[in-house]
Image (spheres, rainbow, N blue to C red):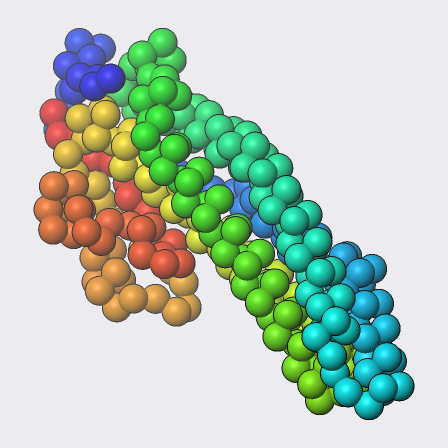
Length: 272
């Protein structure tokens, strides 16, 4: 629902030329909470690789040495165990979906509270009965679908790495302890990727909510606030402090927080 904030601010006696909102920055705790959800899927592979895949590998390697050949049956035993772990990982993704939904809903409520609080102070307007979670439902559905796809990709990538390690190991008769080290390294890659995704997706949801709420309130422009990161996009630093229309080329195709790992923020601006 569109809200005519300008009219409400003028009715409340605001005489300034414009109303500005401070940038709303996600907390480290929110990012960490999402990271735990992603890492939980990798943990399934970590636990079951130790409990199921490696023992099957050791048995297959021992039988292979005894017969001096690698048979399809022996390799197949390892494959069966990997497929069983994959089934558990898929079930954990269904759990992730519900937990992510709860995380995103909490994030949305927190963001909405920040908007309401800021405008109560900056414009003497109480939007607590006018602004609702359902106003950003499309964004919430999009971010849910995106993150389910991402966590599934993390799981698939981890499966692929583990399968490659054990089957190469059987072909070259690599000792189990060496295969275990390689699997641990593969799992570390999965964990690191999970942490990067959680950081990026927390920012993505925050940036999407910034845009949706500002447009809902009639804020057709935003001030670019640079992230201050060491590794930054030069064009983003050049935009720091500039007021940019949401319907401009930048506002549509490269707004703050939408590029991978972009930490820039959009500070809402409403001209009265």
